[in-house]
Image (cartoon, rainbow, N blue to C red; front, side):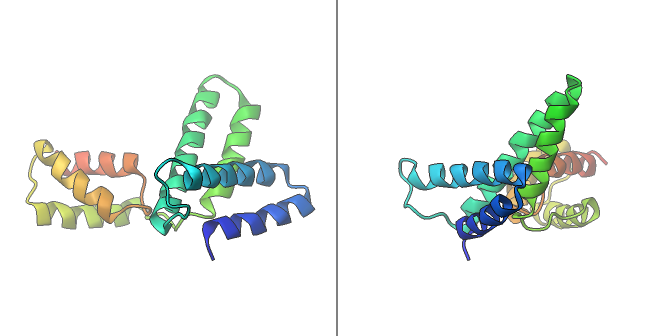
Length: 150
């Protein structure tokens, strides 16, 4: 079952339940999928990787907004963003814990032969490919810096 079909099913359920946060979130995801499918150069279908990247992008946008709303002391807007993040994350694969990410990064560092913070680019390139969809780029970057500065 494609992401679009899952979203449509959830959208119907949210409509019947009159779930305002769910409707808002799912409509945003549906719109993003339609834009991606009809954008210039698109084949009309999204691969699973493209779907995951799309969802991660939507979550990242909402996390950035959430952070800004919290800084500006706007709890009502921050609550909406947090609700949307929770709903969109249900469609993403389970995220790895910091310890699991560290273990994978240590293997990548050993494989690339990185030894100093100057080698961060090599490690990040391999890590982002290997951990795509399973870990946030910000988290990966922070852990790579920590491991290479030892």
